Image 1: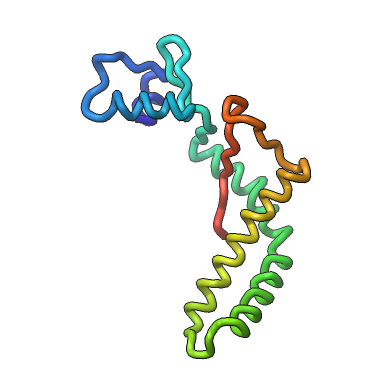
Image 2: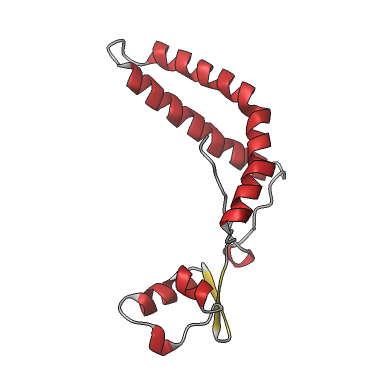
Length: 139
């Protein structure tokens, strides 16, 4: 549906909807993923062109990754060590790597929550104020 909206200036004629599209559109509006504004349907999330995404990645995310990479690698080593000590001895390295990945992922989620709680990230107070969406890169 999103490509259709983009190609048609965010306008949908009732006659253009078929199959599951009307129900999908109604659900998206109800869940506030898409906002109905007159005869237009406006996505409530950012849409990047490939060029914008590439610029965002190279100018913002890649420098941030390089900034935190040493600490992240240190954290990975610590989690690997803890997992080797706490998991049964007959576990293969693949299990240790998998649990280390889960630990890092969980740490990222908790850091997001703590940053929001401490006021470093804006979090809408109610669903009517908006929702928190993140653009994540797994490096």
